[in-house]
Image (cartoon, rainbow, N blue to C red; front, side, top):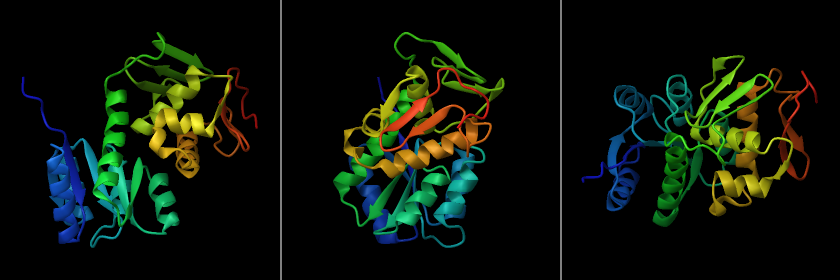
Length: 241
């Protein structure tokens, strides 16, 4: 049986980096497509969505942020943004726009491979439609989650979530009423290699709140336990703090 290669689209206007990343991913048995700017990447994603997109932030015609934002208008394809060293604001902005992860230049080939595999692993977990701990569905307040279909509805309306957002919500709802520490969430959602990257969790939770909460500034469902982690309310009250 021939296993279909996973396709990764790499968008970067630096020909040297593009060749290096492409060759490295091909050696790991991925099928790699190239785009020289955001406009070309967007057109390729619209025509035939890949399994993963690597987006450089600084590109001509359409930068990585704009491309990521436009992609999220029609697709939940996993996205890793590539940023310059020390630009933490770029990382947060990219995550807020819907990116699943980031790479900081200069990065090693090992780091590239690890980040790509981690994001694809999370995506595949969602795509496989695995039920959690024998549960198939759960409803809390106005939010329902179908673990087999990986489907989330709020007020009976489907809410599109990225693989990362879905995994956060699924794990929180499975453990409704329990306080889950940041380290526990990072390890479960992202993996041990992401321990300590609390800003990724915070940005992702805030993005999730904007999709499911009646008032994201005053959460009804996902509550922050300062210095500890997060708790999904088992008995939500409308517009509670």
